[in-house]
Length: 99
Image (tube, rainbow, N blue to C red; front, side):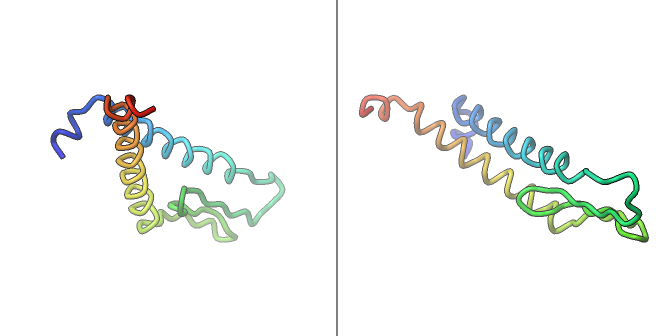
């Protein structure tokens, strides 16, 4: 694992995967933050791939969904490792010789 983290291609892929996960969560936030001014009961939530925050309703509750938050963090970490490994595999000299 230490050699994997020290590999520049893996780190670049890891950062790319993490950035994609953050962007998807931000897009989810922007798309679900739409509420009419005249609506008194407007609930919304956001998160990718599962909801991590819920707000709204007639009583105006706000809640962080902890299981969703931890799932999103685990997804982002796993997705980043996968993208980093793919980038590392495509950047290796052995694979370039076959392409």
